[in-house]
Image 1 (cartoon, rainbow, N blue to C red):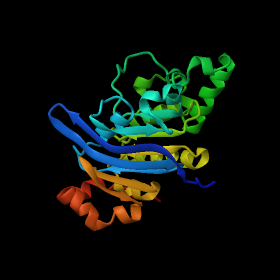
Image 2: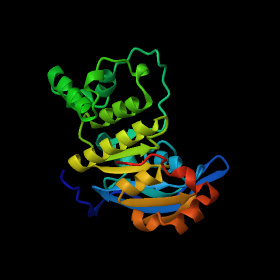
Image 3: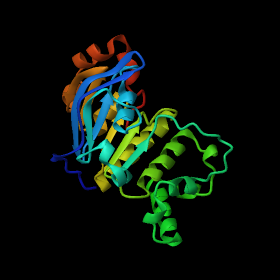
Image 4: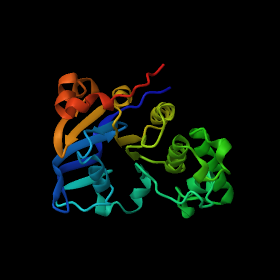
Length: 256
């Protein structure tokens, strides 16, 4: 397996002095950070820390009051067709489980029609993405019948059906059992190494963050600390961030 080289000369995400107010509540206060090409960056913090608000603001889903955001060296208002280089998996995907959409059909939606030369190329792109996430035997299965882990892998295939430079994941392990979490985390790590895309993810699982990420952003409304996992995830730092709830953020299963 080849290693991913992190290019610190090319910031994939550049957030500076970002403040976001939701209603009367200041959810994000003057947050600044950069992530670089090839990196796997985790955003951590207690519930209500503004992590998902930060992610959704970066994606242009929530307006912000001050500061600025650049993705792939462009302000989000100027991304245009470059949004296609960004894949996103939300924490929850509310949908009618009786809706007759198959896994292959879901994955095919991740690639614009005009970027696929013909129906055979479209079929091959979907087939390849499903193989990459080990769902090739579920292509004709309806998405409503998938387990939590299978659904998240289908959404990952949706992101991978065309080349991406950045994957943004918002608590992607939500609704997935412990075995499925480990399976997804290892799959994502292997694809990250193979393809070299950057990852920006919100995570509650500090053990997985320690194992797979190379940069950690700690926040609780504002930025508390930023750095390598070995430094940021020291016990004193975590106790200050999480207090008595620290133990619940560590995965109870161990990797083999």
